[in-house]
Each structure stands twice: as structure tokens, then as C-alpha cells.
Image 1: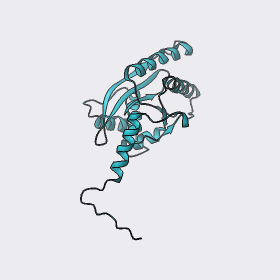
Image 2: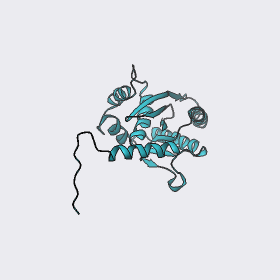
Image 3: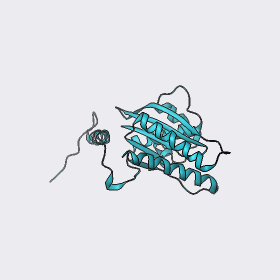
Image 4: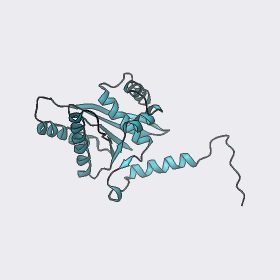
Length: 197
């Protein structure tokens, strides 16, 4: 499965593409940040980010787009821009028939570090370790986008958008089947439980 993670933001929008590998591993395909200037009007900034997202989607052709679920924050201006960019990512994916999954920040932290209370530095370090990178991805928006993609690989549920309209892609079906098989296969040396009828 290939997942494009999007960490939405109006000034910096993190984007990262990750492929699943055998053995519950993941590989970096690409990572970057779409930037806009605060002095530019919001409509033009959104247009610039929209074009950037289109380019990433067309170039990398993901099976799923994983977007951070936006929560209300104290700074309304920040949350508005974040929500607008999240909407752009969802629409760009929907136009291509690509399912979108929303993951909360705590879900991402728990999936990547094992703790839903981890800080950004911990997430960055773990993403570098998981993807076997020599350097920690910077800025944090780039690492967050990769963390979203990895989260969806490892916890493919999320809040999948589109409901019945989206069927699993062949890659998603194969991944789900492999995950199910791994869960049901007895571990070496493990004794099977005997059932009584």
C-alpha cells in the first residue's frame, strides 16, 4: 500500500509518501513541505497549496490519503487555515477516487511512539528510526506528514471518509489480508489452545 500523508497548514503543509513493506515495515518514497507567504491573500495561498497537492497526487498515485483531523484550538486563525487546507487535500483525493482517512494527533503519536502524549521531537526521532533515515525529517510538518502515512499503514482504519462509496483498492485488500493472516498464524513455539465442545 502507498499512503500520502498530509499535515495541513496554510503557511507550511507537510506532505509525505510512504510504501508498506513486508514484516510490518515502511519505506520513504518522498517528503516535502508546501509553503505559502503570509503576506499573500488567503485565496491565492489556497490555490498554490491546491496545485501542490495535485502535483504530489499525480506524481505518486497513492492508494490512500491520510490527513490530520483538525481540532479547535485557541488560535482561530490557525485552525481556520488548517481546516481549509485539510479540505483541499480531501477534495483533491476525492476527485481521483482515492479514499481519505482522518487520524487525530494522539492516534498518530500512539501509533508511531507507543504513547499518545509524545512530543514532536519524539515523533520525529521515531519516524527517522522507522523509515531508517540518517537524519530527522525537518521541519516538523514534514515529519508529521510521514507519521500520518505510517499511522495509516499500521492502523488502516482511521476515520475513513466516503463510507460505502469507497471500496478497498487491490493494494488495501492485499494488505488487510496479510495483516489478518499474521494475526491468526500461530507464533513459533506457541501452543495452540485446545477447545472443548
